[in-house]
Image 1 (cartoon, protein in one colour):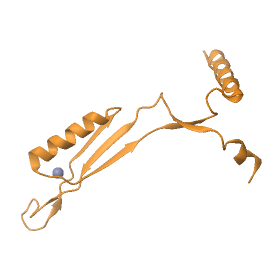
Image 2 (spheres, protein in one colour):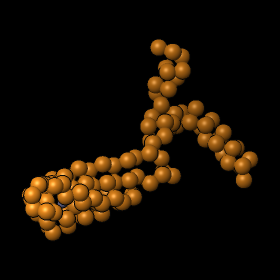
Image 3 (cartoon, helix red, strand yellow):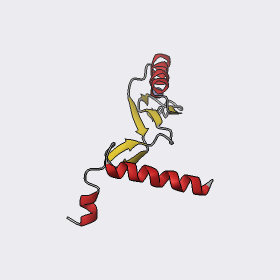
Length: 106
Ligand SMILES: [Zn+2]
């Protein structure tokens, strides 16, 4: 194991508060006969929202009620940051360093 890999072993993954989580719901149900009535086609309904998991769930249920479709795929994207463990000496040092950079750039 290299020294740099070991150095990050105790660090933690935390959500990036500065970035919005994205939720995507896709209907994977099949419409028998499709548009022309010959072949089955995928429904293709989808709903995308930022930072609102409940709204994604609500829209999914509304689509199910409207169409009777019950097969979905949910995808969520969560931005993260690798940080030293909270309360550690390194966490304090890193916070001071980031404040110094923020002051210099403003
Ligand atoms: Zn559908």
